[in-house]
Image (tube, rainbow, N blue to C red; front, side):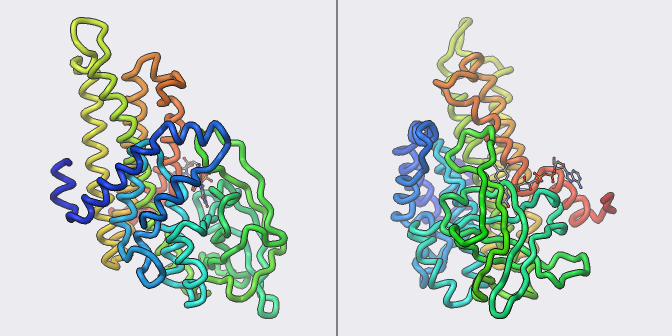
Length: 389
Ligand SMILES: Cc1cc2nc3c(=O)[nH]c(=O)nc-3n(C[C@H](O)[C@H](O)[C@H](O)COP(=O)(O)OP(=O)(O)OC[C@H]3O[C@@H](n4cnc5c(N)ncnc54)[C@H](O)[C@@H]3O)c2cc1C
């Protein structure tokens, strides 16, 4: 256990880390590779993690959750990732959707969704990205129109993960009368089989069990209680879900980076082509040491973001969550790159399983908010520099 972990984490956190690591070890990369090869989903791991209380660890106790927060949930995802079997949908289902419903949902919505999200029997996807808006979510055009008591949604989304396995997707739309140009987002729970809710799988070069989808919402009619929270407080509610998403993407990146680094270190210790193992050459050892430092630093920022968020400081958490996601994305990409290089030709073989992480690691740099958009955020929000766009 590293110093950073023992200083910053309670005994409960350390015990959770150890327990999840043990679960991850039982599944590991082989399980993931098999699931992907056979075109299946991570149902067994998802169910077992849920049964042990890990998936709902951040959700309120009165709705079947563990009563913890992002500090705990990020530990779960990081450790599963470090074992080679990350559950991408954790970023979406308990972290974004669970949080938004727990904080802003009606009593009815909480009772309908939270126990299932916590025990793994229900899963939710989250759709905000649109083809013509991309990083500029202010331009989203998915609109919700009132028709009597109902809502009618029209629009398109892209890259939405896990819609095929999710019971519903939390869709970010905007109300039709929001003509000021300012984002007035509204969140709607759209059941998977709602009439008019179509999906096409996007052909991604990603080696992962979770798939991405283009969504078409064509006059999707929803009851009035499909709206989560207040129509006029949408932005606040949206950010309440996006900060956990960034914290969890940081955990995803750190976990994957640790997995790749561990493989590289093991290889560098034993592979010998001159007099000593390749790990004794500083050209191999130092980049691995740098990767380790960067991952540890990212975790520190992730812990800070989680702490601020769990204490209710949404604004403070916003800056820290962005920084943590940035740092972890970069650390993950670098760790994977160096791990592949450390293995020489074996870095590109299927047997060693590192090459596919090159594309997978880029997800942490692009989604849910790209490296550049975080640099923009820090330039403007933290440093007060003017905007170019
Ligand atoms: C594997 C995967 C899973 C995903 N899952 C989901 C999901 O579940 N739900 C969901 O809603 N979305 C999801 N996404 C979408 C993801 O959030 C977007 O891809 C991301 O926000 C970037 O948007 P974009 O792809 O449209 O890129 P664009 O916005 O078109 O950006 C393209 C490039 O331009 C740069 N750029 C754009 N604007 C600026 C600027 N002002 N200054 C400097 N550089 C700029 C970006 O940094 C990027 O490098 C997923 C994406 C991936 C790859």
